[in-house]
Length: 471
Image (cartoon, rainbow, N blue to C red; front, side, top):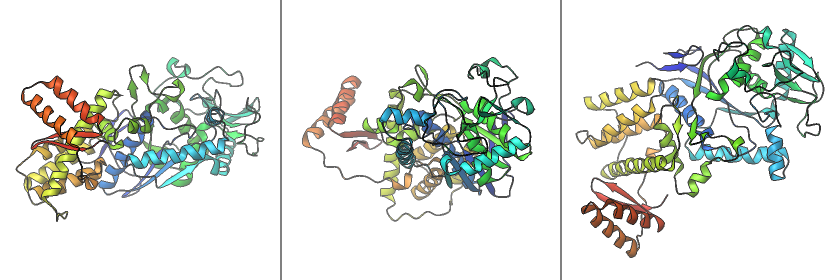
């Protein structure tokens, strides 16, 4: 099956065709480095990593560009509120530069822990002020800007395609509700390209410009940097579903206004929210979970990756500790089966598939993953392979490794740790097995919890329970 992707711009799946043969330009909205990324943010990067892997496995050379927003992103999605970098600096008593450096490093640690491939190019806003100013100058020259109250605004009434991505109409209540009243604007949805007069007169991050000393608006950074590294037209732009109505809509307007070309980006892909009981996870609410929080509770970051792969990227994913525990148990069973396969094939070398059945599994997996990155269906195929006792074990392992090139769960790095199990823990293990034999599941669960409290983890396999050190 040829690769098909859901394009937000046309609101349906379509066959992917790159602008240049065998090459893909991919731009992904990166972090605003004023705080740690929460696990909802990280779901987006897992989705984008799967997309990149699928493109590469379809024989495309991918140039992946991601921005690092270290200035200009105000507290709302529009142009209101305080600069997020200033908020971070005030919160921690540091300079904005120190905040940016620290949280960029923390973000990169999270990405590595989740086995996400780093971008081909990671670009900081503060290192591209020249390109941003040049972009604004082109927009101004082409007649799309006006100056008001010391700031340079984009006039959306001059751009007839403004609502194409969102599908909304002028004065749409859903969009307008996210934009505060601003007497300096001609239209409520107009947005700032360059701030020279704001409530933050002592802001550390300011630069000279043709319009006065100041700093860029949030949206313009992505236009300037993506065009610099990917050209005036490229293949795919990704981001969260919350970016559709304002941020990405504004990006399209200013990019096409600066270049004079329509169809700046061919395919727009957006992931849905990770949701809690109270709604989507957001830093502005003050309560959010980070990957570090999960690790402190004993969850391997790859367990969270597995949890995310269990839902389609365009579906909301509800987070719960029970759901994460389910992913942990499933991930551990998968890991155990792969380790057993490795132990049976100590001199294993990856080879071409020989069995017809193996080729059929590969075709089923490829069809799933090429159908708009259907990771739940791909995982179902993977589990069918793991359970199939008729496939030669060498071919099974080779096939699973191939699957993991798409999934990124680290199968090749799975090895059994040598575990020195204390006598007391062995005794609890035996008691648990006895409880399970008598179908006393409540007692068995309590005994499993005691084993976990002792720093060990029970994995139930077809050959009986096995024990490992806790994650």
